[in-house]
Length: 468
Image (cartoon, rainbow, N blue to C red; front, side, top):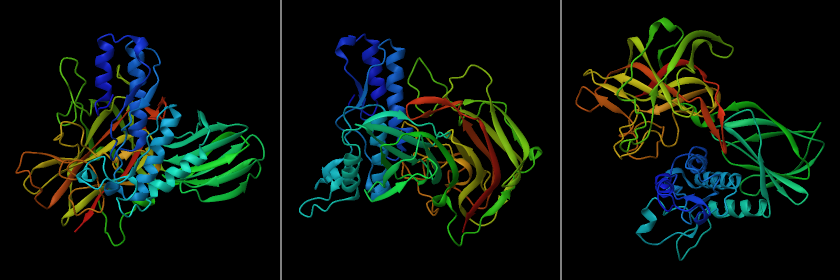
């Protein structure tokens, strides 16, 4: 389906009983833009497959359209865009796509360059035709996977650390990456093995296992292992998130330590700003969210000490990948001095791809919640998943209040479409006071090709802000 609404188009064909024998594959041309491949490319494939099953078409192959993803350099920079392009392609291989249109050849020299499709090309526009990073990374991806077939997805024990095994003749190729930060892996083989390790640019080093194991440091840029050995297990060790560090010189104000549960109250009624149930009678735009049942308790964390633990309880008949939210309100608002441009909170994550949202009131009593405005007839909240719980362990999750924040959100409206206000003039009037958090989780999350259960428990510490 050559449309950003591929799923709906495919559903219409199936609903009108398009003959099965005429269907060779269902594909998509949903751009992706600034949504991580693991939450876009993989989910599109999964949704098309599940739709085919639900509508009685069985396991129809999924594929890409000739025009596929748009990962613009102006949104990320060349290196970031090139890494995401590689991850798009690896996910396509995991789904056995026949067509993997990674990127275009020469940058267009007309206004098409300024579109959402137009600036991530292998070579700059004529007459220079300088090679870009995407040329180097695509060339290496082609070489390292030449003649290889994706055989299996490795179980890493984390829903945000990925490993794929490819077979090629008597040898194998392994690809590893994570969606956020860095991770230290122990890759255990069935026996001692020689390994050729390359990064996404093709820079190589020869390695050997020690005690059948290999230590590997990974990030959002895929790493490849070529070997005649076979991986038996992958263990994830220490994870770190250097890109989420507070800028040097910034002073973070801790508004609420989040150590005592009795300072908070949890809403038991749906919040109109968040509640959005799937409707059958008319079109309802994403994101779907329903009120969930949660428990909040005080715990002593080995790393952070006293903090709060939040658990989604599996109550009621809810689609397991439908976000269930709760609203945590401070009984007493927590004032913030000055004019902060960024809010944050420490989260001990579960890699379940849940979301965090902040709430505050300004000097005029106007309430603000970072849940997206829906101003583009779609979900515009946090496309890059900056506020997503797509990590394990403790990470300081930050979110911009204004454009002065160092946290960038390349998505529709940037910061202006992230905050929904009510009861005032639609302008943030300082000073502000933090009043709460909203968190949503799902009972299952996608691990590239299959849904898997989520451990629906996170921990929270130090509701904060910083800025001018």
